[in-house]
Structure formats: structure tokens, C-alpha cells
Length: 219
Image 1: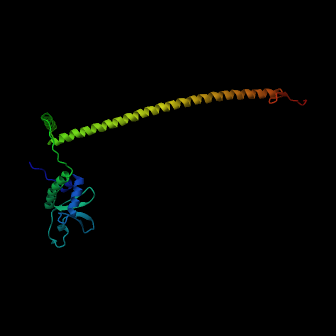
Image 2: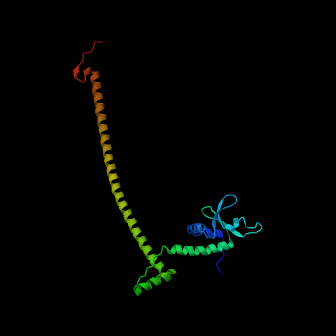
Image 3: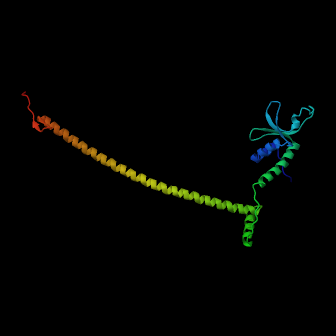
């Protein structure tokens, strides 16, 4: 069985970033398959020149596919153009991907080479490079985890020290509150004693400040 036919809309909404770049570059190429065009309503879309060529006879009917890109731009192309775009995109993506690759040659011991082959087959990977990439990513992830864990542990220790300091301050505050309460109690007692003393002095006609008897007028 062959591959199922892919319509334009589905094609445009896979590998979106690559598709945006590819379609944009194709539109800007002098000999590109497609162009940025304005339809009769004045809206910009991506299409083939023949759809809007005034020299094209009006009785000619075009069969085309239409789709909306993720950025909202409309694309309208014939089936023939669509098939050409798909072929061009495969080349474009392959070249784009290759630019980020660096060719290296390594020499491994036979035992290590056998292990790489075993891991590749066990995971169903197509290339040995995938095994090496997996090992490197695992190493990076492990180091990242260790670093993150160390940072968390450091923060935990700092938090514990901070909590101890807070608890110490809270204890001191509680002690100060107790002392303040005791002072208030003592002051209250002294105030009551003073008031009682002043009342006694007043009842007996004694000047509390000078501790002398005051003369009272006869009743």
C-alpha cells in the first residue's frame, strides 16, 4: 500500500516553522513556484500567478487546493504546484537540517561498538548516532538534576537556618511580652497602692506629699 494522499491544509500545519520559512523563501525567489499576491478584494495570499493573470482566458477553470496557514495567511495552489512544493520542501528541510550537523569520525573498541549496536537494536533506533545522542542527553540531564538538587539542598539549608532564626526571634519576643506583662502588673499594683495611700491621707486630712497634718475648718 502506498502512502495516503496528504491534502494542502494538513501539509501546511505540520513542521509549521519550517513551512513558514520555506513558503516565504519560495515566494521571494524570482523563479519561485508561488508568490505573494493580492486578490480582487485586496487581501494578500500565497498563490500561483496564473490564477490572477489577466491574460488567462475567463473560460479556463482551475482545479486548486486552499488552506489557511497558522499565521492566518491563505494559500491557494493547483494540485500540480502542491506536488512540486512537497518535493521542494523535502529538499529544503534536508539541507536546512544538514547545516546544523557536524561530521565526526570516532574509533571505538569492539566491546563498546557491540554495546552501541545492542542499545540501537533494543530501542529500535535507525542510527548509531541516536545511541550516542541519547547517552549525551542522559548525561546532561543527570548533571542538570544534580545541579538543581544541590541548589534545592542549599536553599533547604538556608531555609532551616532562617526558620531557626525566626523561632529564636519569636521566643525573644514572647519573653519580652512576658516581661512587659509583669511590669504592667507591678505598675498596676503600685498605682493601686498609691491611690489607696492618697485616699487614706485624704480621709485623715494628711498631706500625702509633705506627710503633715492639715488644718480642717470646724464643722
